[in-house]
Length: 316
Image 1: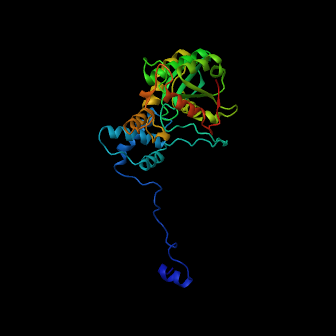
Image 2: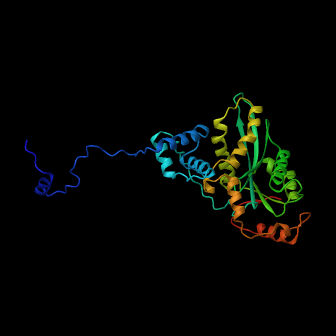
Image 3: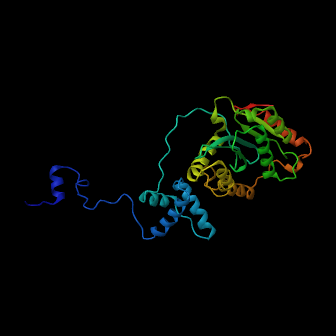
């Protein structure tokens, strides 16, 4: 059969020739580089220790490691390409029905609002560990926690308040230097009269979320999901004693090492340190009367009480 040039054929048929050429060697979906091998090894090292991390948090870990040794960070797109080519990407979470929530939990500065919640860890032998924790609603640091192999009471929440204040302001402080909201749900441990009175003694403005509105304490709910996925789901849970022994290491890793998407993939303590470096002038804690409520303390507390739009009910 006689062959004719493709140009003449297309001209005779009055069709475009741009899509008439057969691509004998299709271009691969993902390209490869010779320098990819050492990068892939670094990715695999992170994946071995943190199997629940996607490409963004993996890129955050590698970025921190390379900056410590004075090297340029990898482009996150390169991390995604290599993880996709080697089946290291994690499956996307299923979309959940969206519920309207108009309030805002995140604050612009640290030590304005703390949130708290309780969750359970089920051990392999049937025992349960009940954990209560506190988070800063700006830097997301997990400041303190209490854990027991039985149901928690208001005494454990009072202990959690003590640990939170001491962890942030030192053991010598007798009262919060400025008013801080303590946000929690309507669990009996948090709504107990003793808990609210004790929080007031410290200087907390105790608030509870509206009923049937878990989104109003969404930061705590998100922390529980992350904690169970990254730590509880990847470690051994033979009994309550073993779990309680591992908890300090898990909470420390979350605050000091784990990258957070809402913090530019820095860990909470890294973000807090960056904020301290670029600290803007604001409320001067030294002007507050630590032994009582100074005028500056009272003014700020009044402003916080009169704020609207949070959709939270004040208790106490």
